[in-house]
Length: 236
Image 1 (spheres, rainbow, N blue to C red):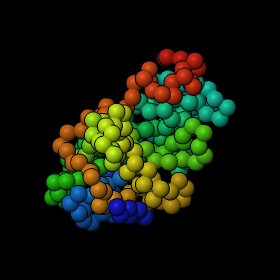
Image 2: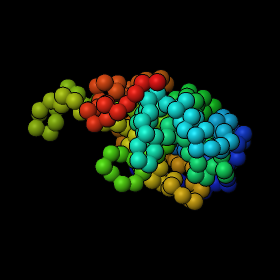
Image 3: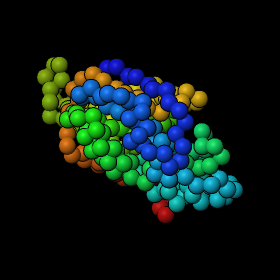
Image 4: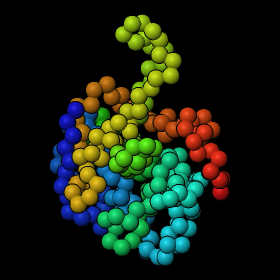
């Protein structure tokens, strides 16, 4: 798998996402994946608010969340079906404003996928809108897929044999988040200014015209980590 992070100029609020990609990705090889940070998508869609008081920021976070609890450092939230800090609202590299997550990352990915396939005349193409988050009991941030288009995000091993013939009962590979993690590692978390990544040569990837946005989600009541935080979450 080849991961190429692309250095760009600063993307400004209201800039064209399509023009941005075309400027820095002159050609796309059949079977490639284009990963783009959610911040750029949000800026293109105008998902930006003026930075106010701490209380105003908290209200924005709660408004963007399905569930929220106050922790020592952040509001721990569920937003877009994903556990994350502060509903993904970010102040870093935001020039004094707050950048919200895209309203619907799967819809945004599908729109870009449709346009880029026509523009670059490719059939097999994947789009991933990435974000980064921390995991319980692990230091540092890693990438996740907020939304994607053009490929199956889950590889299901259930019912297939392992190397000794034993059938898998629960094993599934999260392809979307795995690719997003590689992309975000290439993007960096600071001043790198590399919000675009082109990924080629992903083995075993299944391209598809239609994506099931729920395939990578687990209902919170079925999540194995629920006992750790269920007593603290309050429904809005």
